Length: 389
Image (cartoon, rainbow, N blue to C red; front, side):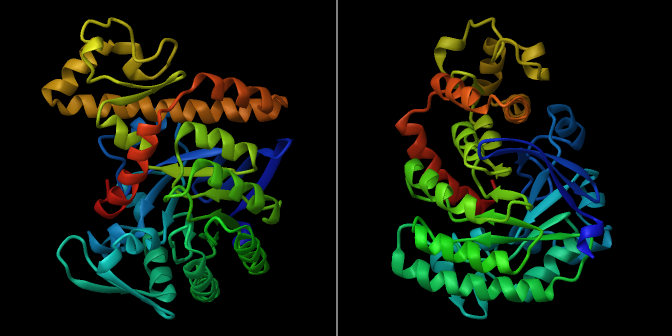
């Protein structure tokens, strides 16, 4: 019955890359796609009209955080997430598994589920595959994720144990999920181990989910290990279903992952760093808090069509950041999300034109990122996952 609400159509290919559309009850998702993260049913500092203006056609909300506050029952009484947050486009909810497993000493895993303590008030809660399906179906997103376990990607022994559990939970989620107007995606795990990833892809493909995610990456492994894992995993996933790389949103990683066959992305990175004054340009990031921008009359990026760049100078934005003005956070977020959505537009155009290899080479030659930034991202990601930032 799910097929009457969803359709995946590939319009063009260029090597492993795909230009496609995933049709949902709340509109089409043009792919490759990047989803801004609205953890608490809100992309921080922005409104739904801002998201439309930057070009977003999919957003992500978090099951763990919304379960704790304000509660899925309350959101269901409002008519689901779309009406609750006044967003009429497609929504994806993760299962909350990553947040729960990031709690470390505040959770206990067993074969039936995971018991954890709330990061808000210390109260005890439990997620099982069945309860997570109940929560996500009440929230009402277009795409829901199965409950999985996200272990240390470098720990072989634990990945073997966790993978067996993830597969059992996927079967239970599939059985418990009953909404035909909601696409349930499976999640491939297995750390950086090629044989485990292959095993997971094969097992989950047999369950015939409407889409497949690659989870457990960008959580401590090197970029080279992440790319190698995608090289192994993507070819083993169904060709007629969308492929989603969870929690990855650095521009250079998106360009590399699309090259390997990924269709969907989400990440808090663009919005989080914008609130700290770090903004994207084609040459890499700039930190507007630096003194060298105090008298800079140029926009954040020449040629950018976002409201921020069309209206304000780097010097003015630096003043707002240094003065602690809330407007700085909003304007920076608008720019970074427009940069990401414009990047996806450029990627889709390059795939359609059959020029993606050249686009990839040119982009990576210009866009630079320092080792210090890489280390900061890895530390901040786990911390932000728990806090909902």
